[in-house]
Each structure stands twice: as C-alpha cells, then as structure tokens.
Image 1 (spheres, helix red, strand yellow):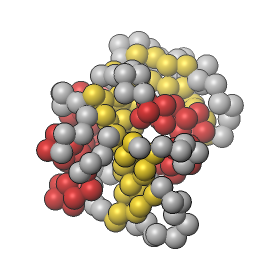
Image 2: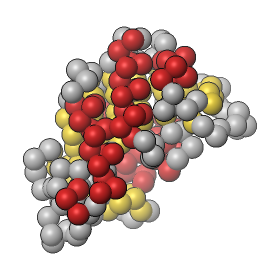
Image 3: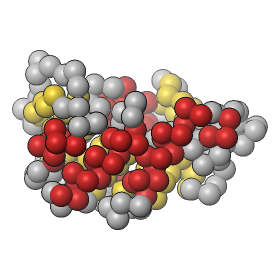
Image 4: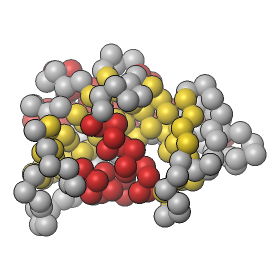
Length: 197
C-alpha cells in the first residue's frame, strides 16, 4: 500500500488527480484542504482540514506518507517552504508540485503572452519552484498550460526549452500527475512544461 497526500484536494487539478488515483487498488489517500468535508469518501481516503501556510498543521499529516502532490494557489512560496520542511522532517521523498507555464520566460511569442517578465503574478510561482528545486527531494515540477476540456494528447518541454503549446486538458494533467506520483523516477528532479501540441 502506498500512502499519498493531495494538498489542494478540492481544486480543479487535485480533484482530477484524486479521481485517477482512486481507480488504483494499492493507494491510500490523505485529502488535504482548508474547506473539505468528509462526505462521499472512498474506503481508501481520509480527509484532513489543514492550512498549508501553517507548517505545524502540515507536519501533522506528513507522517508515514510516500508521496506528496501539491496543486494550490495563493502563497505558493510559503506553502512550498512548509511542504519541503515537513517532508524532510518526516523522511518523505517524492513531491509532485504544480506551478505555471511562463515562470522561466519560456513561452514563445507565437504561443502567446504570459511570461514572468510581463506577469508579476507569476513571481510566487517562480519562488515556489526555486524552493522545490533546491530542496534535495525527489521532485517533479509541472508547468501546465491553461486548463481546458479539450483532447487529452500532450507534449512535454523540459526546463530551458520553449513551451510548445498553450492549453492542456485537465484530464491529461490529472493522468500525468498520477503517473508521476506512482513512478518515483519519472521526470525525477526535473521541471516539465505540459501542453497540447
């Protein structure tokens, strides 16, 4: 049995990842959110109300976990720091963390705007990515395109490569995230851009 935490379990991406992982037989999920009820839980799930900006609350749910998935908004850099600290304190190695396309100014003009140098909103996403990259953990950063319900095909661009598309289906993003959580060496210690060709 593999134990996994989804931080941001009620969000668009967290809900999708939860759905994918619930189809597996050997995964126990801890669902973390500030506003989550215990209604409609599966047998392999437990729910924890937790503010990820509070390192003490986060530490309480980290024990005995094998992998952590983070898909949140808000104070991303503070949350990243708290997640990394809690994981290290509890010897949890695998982290899959959602950031955003554009944090490395990798979006070519033909794809569209949205790079860090023209969008100050991305500063927190970039700081969070820097924290995760320097953590020493077995991380994968995902820099998705804009979410939609389009086709599920996608391509990956590595850090330093131009972003290839603009959008990604939420279903494809959920499937990829679940694969990364299950396969510890898949894109280990890499930052990957994900978009539809």
